[in-house]
Image 1 (cartoon, each protein chain N blue to C red):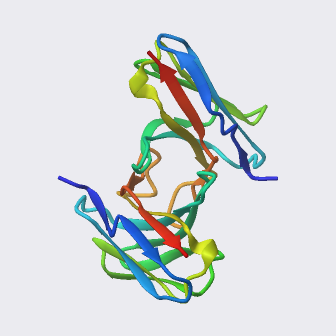
Image 2 (image 1 turned 90 degrees about the vertical axis):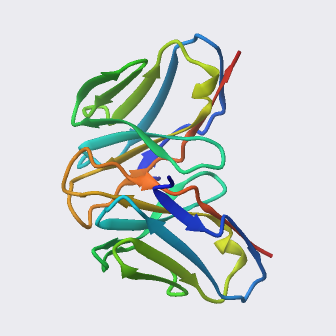
Length: 113
Length: 115
């Protein structure tokens, strides 16, 4: 079993839909949670960051962490065709040199206009 | 102005050859990384350098050898290439791993195909 599990999709939604992307993890030591967005033929870029449990909102994006269930989510409201990309969750147990960021395999999202 | 640049963008080579990938960052970051992304998009760390010092060395075959001539450059040399080495290799940098909101800045990847 991988440390971080993520449904690869693809997930196809119409423009304007609310999108829910999820990851589960097995390592209870993880406390730092991130979402990266990767467009085709490009490197990933940081979208959202959260520490421990709770919610964080940034524009149309909301990140949620439920440490008791070892489950994190990214919600996208009013999805746009420009949101079509691969979304990778990533997490680490601690900060500092030598601490590794563990990525999920990514979910491909397609928003149709 | 490109922040993390990798060359070459594409690399097609035969089994058994030796090849290098170069990476440069102009962000002034102290830490640089090599990640491998396989065909299923799974992104996994290979190496991490901080100020030219090797910090993370994952269980990667010793055919892979990173080299950091200065903190703005991190190159990856691969000896005796195998079919299984075919993947996209990403270079990344970060400002300070001790800060919680210090993101990784990725290059656009080098697509390596071994035939």
